[in-house]
Length: 331
View: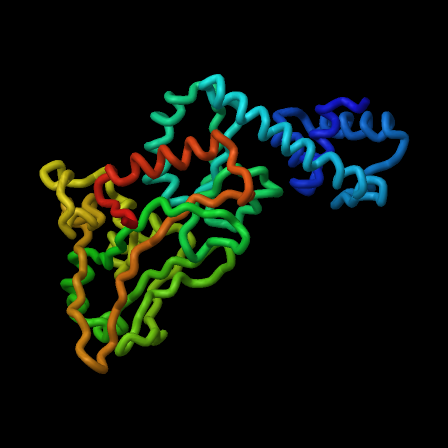
């Protein structure tokens, strides 16, 4: 009977696309992972994988073997997760992917308390705005905003976060404060470019309820929203950013209120470095800036079975996120 570790290495290598990926997921060296697969092939008496310097592919025997053992391995992992819940202790690795800014400002500060509740869990954090392949990169749960959701994944809403137009006092003194959406088009707009596909995150405009895409004057584009906020702080233009980016610098006197001012990136406003811009509502026929929230979701790769450790994390986030200053949630 082939060694279970060897079978696991084989499956992880195919899921991740390389032996190095399997080694990383299992916490062993690439050499050890390669030896595991070679040992498995020797015990089975057939080659499962053909390797080149840049890629690997399944042989016919490998395809048939993978189809049989991959579901079994997944069931074993699920069984272990369920047993750990019965005994009251979650254990093993929990790999969490998250969009960078939300991970940095919101998720990371919340995770130590979760880890303290489950000391046998090993948390791995992958904070990036690129497109994460949850299967190949062996991610247990991925936190994404609405525009980054993929078809076929099971999702659960986590947070709906206000976004605010911000600019420095110096910029507004020099260029004036826009009063309407039409005014905004004449200003230097700092646009977030999605790292996952290179596309701009569209600023939402409409006219009489119908979406339109007017020509913006782009002062700068960037793949990191924190960088764009700093650019705005230096007088570079107007940025549209989530309230959570500066939530740790909220004025203590306002920390427990739900007024709109709490939703502002207060670190900069309170210090006189950035000013929130409130546009006037549009009249009939006028351009409207639809200040839509940024919705975040927890995404799972399996609709039928969600491991206990993943359920525990998502339940925890759903419970604690509403108590974070500057954030709001779907009812």
